[in-house]
Image (cartoon, rainbow, N blue to C red; front, side):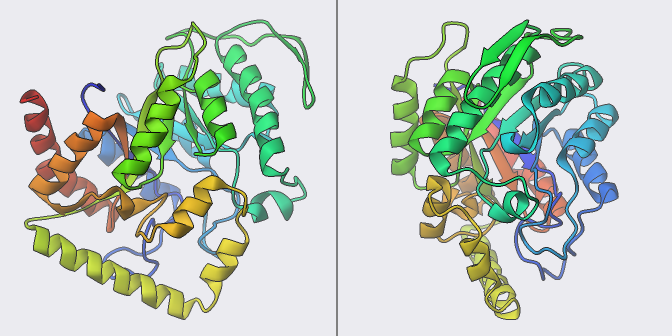
Length: 357
């Protein structure tokens, strides 16, 4: 059973993680806003922040999108305790360069950095830039070689690999292992290739918000898989959009209003949502599942069930933790206000319930 629950917040590099027209939150992906959000998250006691990686904003090409890795380096220098997680798509950068950048931010943060490997699902970033997107199975073959190189280099190992995609010859990076063995490796993805890669290389697998029975099956599958001797048992996280209020009825009213805002966004955008879905990899299991699960918020959002009174949300978090979820990747709207409510009302209730187990 996992230990104490860990709470992570998405860094608002897209400008919003729900409605584009919420009256209390304008779409703002500026560094000033993200900097203040991460500093506030640390002050409120959140354990981690995840900085998503896109070059164009998937919510709309005309919207700002903050760069993940420059923001991660800056956030590392401005904070003291919070874990900084930067997402990366393997196909956009050579593994030796990425490993060097990761070790650099690990040094800046004094051992608080992590990478979140996502093998890509949104095609415009890669296809329209000329980088190109490999078919799903080949992406994971590429990602397997890529992550092997990155993992070894982040540990300071002298690395050679002659594979189908990379030819690395006696390569080594310094400084390394200044603070720990290497930065933590998170992964997203639910397909068979994603599970196989997570079992061999990842420390934590992020699940999308989903029903309990689906998550139980996925967690059990990963736990059955053989892991390298040097790696600890794999741990699990889950994305969730939180709507916590004084009562269950109040939370349901807010959720109903969020669905109204969502419908208004879609009406104003015409067929933007359909175009967005067409631009995702149709073979991505993650996105197939997300399309089948109506939700508000990123990566399954409200499908994780963290909607209700402060007590209800706390009880559901503890239930998820008992099922194997340790790290909760949270989003809110308005974001900063939601963070403060969660820290003041939900987090103390979770800690109280955890002491009673």
